[in-house]
Image 1 (cartoon, rainbow, N blue to C red):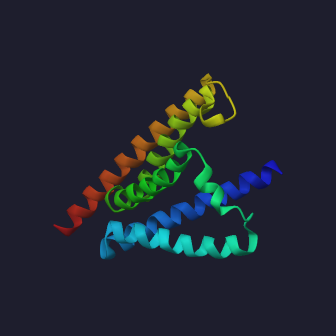
Image 2: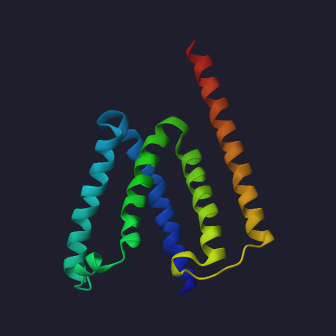
Image 3: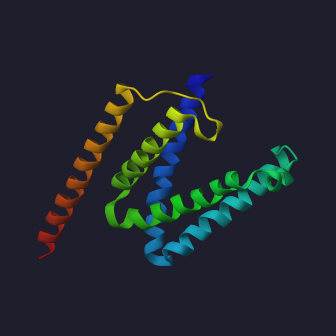
Length: 157
């Protein structure tokens, strides 16, 4: 069962990367806010159909949830908006690695302290090493982007 969850998460990462790239390109023509809106409207319509057939029938429970839990919707919107803004400027890989680093740093704190009623997983040297390697990866990807951009600029001159 765990391997299936990992494979589904991997598939989610693949689709997220493709979506980031496509949204970044679309935003150049339609605009950042418009592209973000299109993504959420499409997602809303898709999920409405899925809820009709597979939902648990308790949509009103959302309004009974603690207010801090509702902040997740705003945070997801901000993530998508910031990603749509970043991709055309720094590329898909740098955007995704920066996003993953942000997720890892926050996740380390959430896991270590058990925030939001999550599983407590103490910080150890392996997690710190993973963070260090991600930061190194971001550095090299970003430097590679800058050099590729400089070479492209030289060819057009």
